[in-house]
Amino acid sequence: MIEVNQKQLLDAGVHFGHLTRKWNPKMAPYILMEKNGIHLIDLNKTKRSLEMAGEALKNIARSGKKIMFVATKKQAQEVVSSEAQKLRMPYVTERWLGGMLTNFVTVRKSLKKLAAIDKLMKDEEFLNLAKKERLMKMREKEKLSRVLGGIEDIQRLPAALFVVDIKKEHIAVAEAQKLNIPVFAMVDTNSDPDQVDFPIPANDDAFKSINLIVGVLSSYIEDGIEERKKDKEEAKKKEAEEQPQAEGAEKQAEEEVAEPEAVEEGKENKE
Image (cartoon, rainbow, N blue to C red; front, side):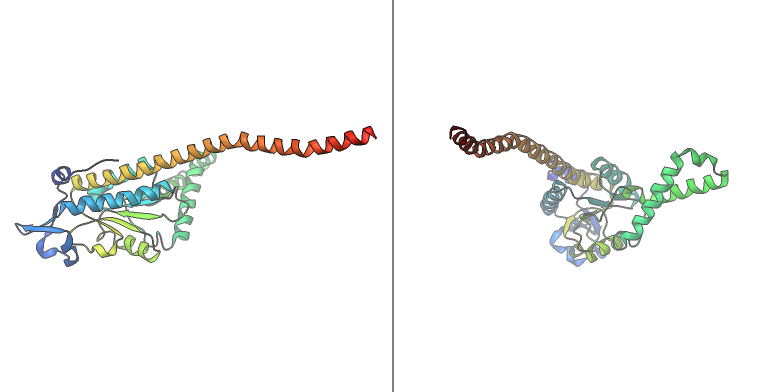
């Protein structure tokens, strides 16, 4: 995992909050001071929160469950989609569709539709369609891919959500709350940290800040995935080692059963 220190957090501008008049009083425990009309975040608390969130995400990844990344603001889209793709985790960076979690059955229908169009476009039959119909299918695929492309491989609801800006992604947060899905989030001084399970006090507007926080959390998730692979390899190794022993024990048991039978047979022959 990536070890982060206060200097890195400081250099990335993680400590810069919003104007004091825009603050949410519930963020008071995470605010260090006010300077030039701007609240400054306590980076000690950011570091601790980041480590707690990272360990929890690592355990989720180690269990083989999915973590959905949500960030539709411009400065976060590229880094979030890139990290999520690298980790093979679902992500939403274009637009959050209302009901993406609470009405997952409908979303899955749209995903099946996208898969069907994709399959059709790879088939020779697609070339036999009229030009207008082909164009319509291509536009439909482009539209669905833009909104659902990041979640096309998801088969069930995610085990957790990671959100960059909870004010902007308030619908996603509300849906997760309704379904008791834990939410990990970057929380700026204008937000309510009580809305999420693992708040990480941080500047959620600057690219450098988002890039650093997302990168650190991704490294924890990556460690969880690697540990899961090791667990599987060890389980296979243990199974392979135990199999000959089990076969040997079974063979011995068969021999023990066969021995008395042979003795009895010998007695009968003698008589």
